[in-house]
Length: 326
Image (cartoon, rainbow, N blue to C red; front, side):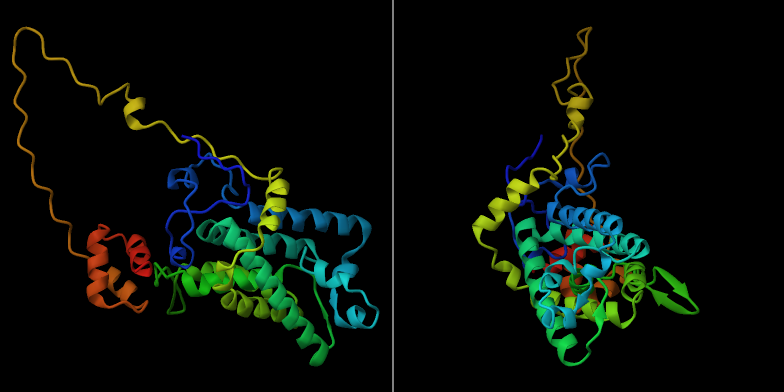
């Protein structure tokens, strides 16, 4: 069935590792999220709006040579009263390379945590982190270092990277190795983000760091949602870019032509064979030690880990979700 919502900014997600922070109402089913025919930003209208804004602003700035007007420069902000720079500095990146690699790093993180938190709380989270990181930047660059900062959503990248670092468990600690050192699957995301964060040196590291700190501080603040009129306006604007949820695939019983219907008795007067007695279900195999070690390394006691693995058929990710939700 189709699950739709009139409010474009009222999506949420099924339980995931971050779910214990925000127990929002589930709007979409997991089958819709994993449907290969589903659009990529399904359930993440805030993330889609951020990406579209970055691309469109970059095109406009490139065509009209306005990149210099987007730079975060405290001298021009305070001495020349160019306060608009505070609001436009995070809209887009300053070059095509930064735009491509920045969106490659930013999009998956934005989409993931918006689906896990719900769009209302994720929108509040982005607003709070943007305000807090901007205040930190104004104080830092004005008092300690009077330099220009490249334009780009580096604080927002730092904020979602902070969530990724703190709340995403390492499912495969030995995903690959280099020169005798083991790296988890999270290293791929860290490497891509490092490519973007280090591209401009101190000018890009600083806003990302402030965004990282702001993201960790604003996690609890996101429980306090923005005023209702903000969501009303965002919902009206979001209808233009919000993706409709696709139809879920037909159930197996329908695809098989009603296999669940009662079968006819065999012809020729022969009696139907008596059903064989139900076999007792096999007990699940004991949890592997590697899975236990992965979860105990996250700080959980062994007894709780073993119980969670047994309840989830030794699925490490599902067990981690269960443990994180208590």
